[in-house]
Structure formats: C-alpha cells, structure tokens
Length: 245
Ligand code: ZN
Image (tube, rainbow, N blue to C red):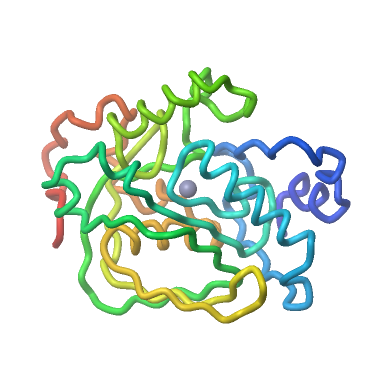
C-alpha cells in the first residue's frame, strides 16, 4: 500500500492542475517514505507523464540543491531516481575530504526500475543527509519561489557547512558499500548500467533505499545524528571512526 494522498494525487492526475509550478519536496513523516515504490509500467516508460515526472525531479534536485532525488520525495511512489554531482558542489570540500570520500563529478543519471548489486564487501562511514530532513524555514524548499539571492545563499550554506547530500537540516553517519552496480532503464526505455564507487556509490545506495521504503535514519549510527551546524563536533564515545573500514 502506498501513501493514500501520494497515490491518489498521482493516479488521479491531480498534479496536472499545477503544470507551471514544481512539486515541493515531501518531508520526513510522510508515509510515502516507509513503503516500497512501484515499478514503472514498462509501457509507460517514455510517456509524457513519466518524462514530466523525471523533468520535475531534476529541476527540484538542482534547485534544492542536492546530488540525488527519488520519486517518493516529490510524492510519486514510483521507482525512479535522478542524481548528479558537479565540480561546483565539490569545490567547497578540502582535497583531503574529496580523497577520503572518493568523490568525483558525474553527469546527470536518470534510472527507472533500478536494481542495485553490491560488488565488494568494502564499506565506508561518512556523514550524509537527506533533502526530506531539511529544516523548514527560509532555506526550505516548500516555497520554490525563493529569490535568487536566497537560492544563492542556500547553495553556499549547504556546500560550506555540509558538502554532502543535504542542505540545512539533520545529518548522521551511515555505513555504505564502496562498490555497487545499478542497472535499470533510462527515460527512453534503453537499458542502462552504472558501475559506481566511493561517493557516487553512496548516493546511489541512498536513493535506491528510498525506493525500498528505507531512510538514512534507518541505517545511521544513531549517536552521530545531529543538526548540520554541528557537523564538526566530535563523535560520541563508542562511535566508529569515519572513513573506509
Ligand atoms: Zn534522501
């Protein structure tokens, strides 16, 4: 079963009414996050409706800004993820951080009906966040009519203070696999395959988890959970060290 509101909205085409505005990012607490998303009907792949959803997802992700988004995060309970990482996002991190996280820019990826496979047992622990755990307020995404200045500040804020997945909000350490393979279909129904490692593998696992009804807080080292501003504070005693295991 899917979130009644999200499902009804999607199936009845209620969102069509609002063609010009982008959907807001659904926030933690919505049941859509705890239910597995449905496969996109192969007959629907390539349809205008699915292309519009993907288009909205890309715009919402870039505006947030974030490095990944899953369809449930805009209230669409379907197995679709989008992700990208850019030089611009990465430039706020130190060389040491980039190296430790094995983070590299990559072009936009759109994957439908994805399957994720772990390719090794190597794992790493780092802080990550989620756009659905962003604090409400002027940095929030509820109002996508933010001024350019606010948008600029939001970007700066995210990158300087966090440099990972989320903007202002909550973060926690999550152990993720370092080598994964994701197969699926692109927007046009062509089979696609991504061999990912390091930070890209982390983003993929985070987004694929969304489609299985799993959030980063379900996997986090709970004593590391904190507000973004406290990223730099020491870890509590007993917490595992950050980095590759
Ligand atoms: Zn997320």
